[in-house]
Image (cartoon, rainbow, N blue to C red; front, side, top):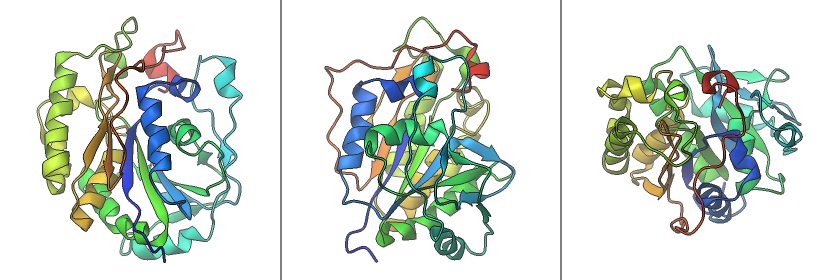
Length: 286
């Protein structure tokens, strides 16, 4: 068991082009990685493994998945060769009871929601990484409850990181304005942050807000923040905002942490990366 309880984080990942860039969001991801003692393993909850089951990767060498379209070759050339930790499956399966969880030995790996942020947070790729799927059949409350159960891992040397976006509407993107924010996107992001930072136990109710359908027309990018909220409520420590901002009008780049001693991002660094693709947002799998 770890002598020091690790925190947890939710990172707003935005475009995969952030993997190649240096900006105030990627600076925050880098600082998050430096904020903790070396983890025994990292459990990633990425928006991009959204399937009709709850599963974790259980292979010794998870592959790097390039699950996007129309981007520069440099992105497809990236490999993030972190080892897996198959033995972690049994620990997690015990922790989440009575919920059932499957072991994926060969179908998935590390998708860009995982490696695009880990490339900055842990660039050496020497910490074992296990990825947890988002069960598309389950409501927000299920994901919150899973986050609460998984908070036990923080005392066992496992760092839990969610990767998504609180606001994520690809059809509404303003492709010509990387740092733009539509009023409705700001309104929902601010409502969400007010709840997450003061009443994390109420986070599942965010899906009932009037602005949710426009902010998250599909839920997969929003749900990873439920794992942070559940962790927060379980240990009684409220999340703090690590960096805030917007991209292309309809993406929130907000990152939050629980027990993450991360300084504010530099105001002198640029914001969102160039989009890097001419493909429509909903076809590029941002």
